[in-house]
Image (cartoon, rainbow, N blue to C red; front, top):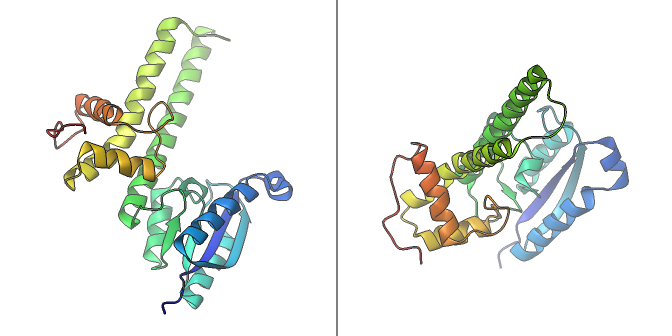
Length: 229
């Protein structure tokens, strides 16, 4: 009889207050425990770190990786964004050779996790850049509070475009693998990737997001030719 997969969990919280209060810790532990139980594995160790996601030097993560190597275990995290919004950091983790899983993306392989990390990094950069420019422009105009309807509408368009830029490469990869729209919907939902509205994906939302991505002249494969269902 095969031995159950041995898992070692790594849980990170951003502030000392969260670490002491358990805020965020218990939620991540619950997600990890549910994933391990569902996979029929065994959680043999747990490492907790209180550290900013912007810093790559993490003693507890290194200890968890070393433990995985010694015990031939799989590193399990609750959410990919708890690890880092940094492609280089994720690539470095992959290069260690230690298998790792993200409980919020149970079907994602190493390649897809790399794509998701790239998406998260680019999204974070764009949000930071856009916010900085908007604040500078508002300050120059002497604006203190409030925005006009036109500004709000423009912001909505920008947000929708940014979401399409982020999700477009993922849809493109799945499309290139020969997946139908319906299968892409199922894959995005199973990986807990939310739509622009923050909810579940449907054939129409996948096609709309892809159409917007194509209109931004970012697609290399063109429109879907298969029916949505």
